[in-house]
Image 1 (cartoon, rainbow, N blue to C red):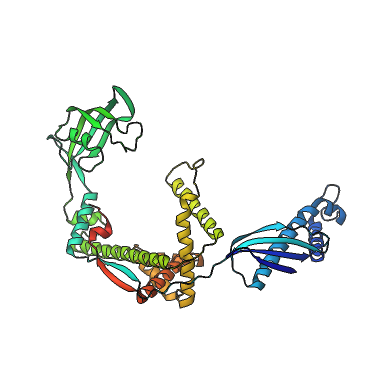
Image 2: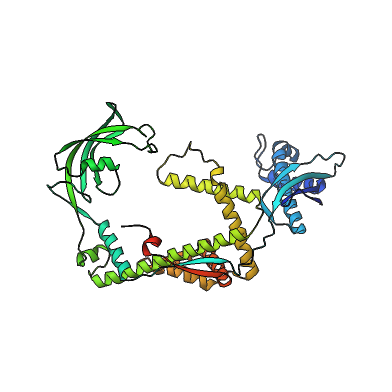
Length: 435
C-alpha cells in the first residue's frame, strides 16, 4: 500500500492511497468461491453453478463489496500508521489510475482533531452560588404544595382576584366575529394573568348569571397577528364563581403527600430532605455551568466542521423526537441547521476541552464515584436498590453517570485552581417563582 499525505489547512488533510490490484482480485476470487457454494441460479442445483456463471450473476456486487472494504481497511491502516486522529467521517473519491494498472487509487479527504491547549484557570474568577435552606423555605414549599391541591367552592358573591370563574364569551372586531374569540364553559383564575388585563377587569365584580360587555385592546405585539393592535368587544356570561380553598396542614394533607401514617412532622422532614436535595442539584448545575463557561471563554480552539455538522444532526434529531413526543406532526416541519449551529459549536468545543482536561490531569471517573452518584440518584425512588441494580445490568447504562462524574471531576479541579467567589442567592432566585 502506498500513502501520500497532503495538508490542506490547519485541520483538513487529503490522503492519496494506492492499493495493489492483485490483493483485491484475490479477495474477489475468494469471496466468489464462498458465494458459489450456496448460490441459487436458475438451471442449476444450489451450489453447483460454474464459477464463471456465478461471476456473471454476482461478480459486480462482490467486487463492489470487496472494494468498499479494502478502501475502509486501507484508510484506517494508513491513519493508524500516520498517528492521525480523524474527526468525523472521511470523504472517499476514486483517482484515475492512468498508466498504473497494478494499483487501485483513491483519495480520502478528512479533518483531524485540533490541538487543545486549555488556558490556565489560576486567578480566573468563578462565581459559586449558595442558598440557605431554613424553616422559612420549607414553609414556602409547603404553601406551594397546598396551592397545587387547591379546591374551588362555589360562592354567590362578586368575583375577586384569586377566584376561579367559568364563563361563556363571544368577541367581535368591527362587528365581525374572529377566530379564537369565543368559547363556552371557559375556566380561569382571576389575577394570574391568564387573560388580558382589560378582559379580567371586566369580569372582576361580576356575580354568577351576570352578563358583561367588555372592550379589550390587543397589544401590537400580541401573538395572534390577525387581532394584534385591534380593539374587540366581548360579551361575557358569568356561569360560575368559586373561591379557592387551600387544604389544612394536617394528617390528611400528609397522607396526600405519601406519608401513610399521616405524621405531619415526618412529612415536614421528608419535604426538607427533598428540598435540600433539589437545592443541591440546582446549585451544582449552576456552578458547573459557570465553570464550563469559564473554560469556553478562556480557551481558543479551531473546531472541525465535521464534528459540528454531526452535532447539529444530533440536535435536529433530538428536537424532532421531543416534538413528536408532545404529539406534534413533524413530518413536513423544517428544522434549519443554522438554528442549532451555535449550540452545536459550544457542545463540540466543550467536549474537546473536557477530554483534554481529563487526560492531562488524570480526572477519569473512578468506579466508586460512579456508584456513589447512582446511589444518590436512586435515593429519590421508593425502591432505590432496584434503580441501582438496573444501572449495573448493562455497561451502556453506566455511560450517563460516568460522563456526569467526569464533568464533576473537571469542575472540582477547576474550582481548586480558580479564584472562587461565593454569591448568596435567595431561595426564590434559585428555584424560580413557584408561588
